[in-house]
Image (cartoon, rainbow, N blue to C red; front, side, top):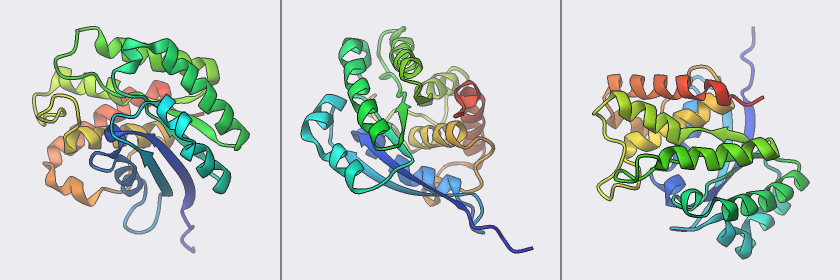
Length: 223
């Protein structure tokens, strides 16, 4: 029997360093495609700027141009990390405007639910989650619960650490967990591939991170 060619999915990521650090889109692409060519081939583009909010991206217009120039299956939106806490109303306004553009381009909106800073208030992660999931329900977007996977992992494991030294950005393990959450939400099942950079992580740690992402993502699975 001839080997079936992998499905190709095109994704546009919009955000800032929380997406760019450790190349989350690239890690997702390597998780999704096995070395024998089975799985899902992800073609991806990242539009990012350090500290950028979705409003900044809307005003700049680069994302709208990208969607006019190319067809994407998914457009991933990552809000500035603290704005869902400080001003969820503004975040929701920006997401709605983006969703209208994304729908017009015949793509699907994906929301990248990120994590709270290491020394944030105890309710910070839940407030971030509430901001993302409420607008996600309103516009029928896919929500990738990376921040909730972080919370679940940190509740049970001391290593590997997920926050970098600045207590905000992700370590390699943190980004790997986020990428695993993307795969589990969008495609389900165990990722067939493994990012080359993930070889720097202990195999037992990788297994724990994958399993956490799988467990947390189940209620958020794309339909």
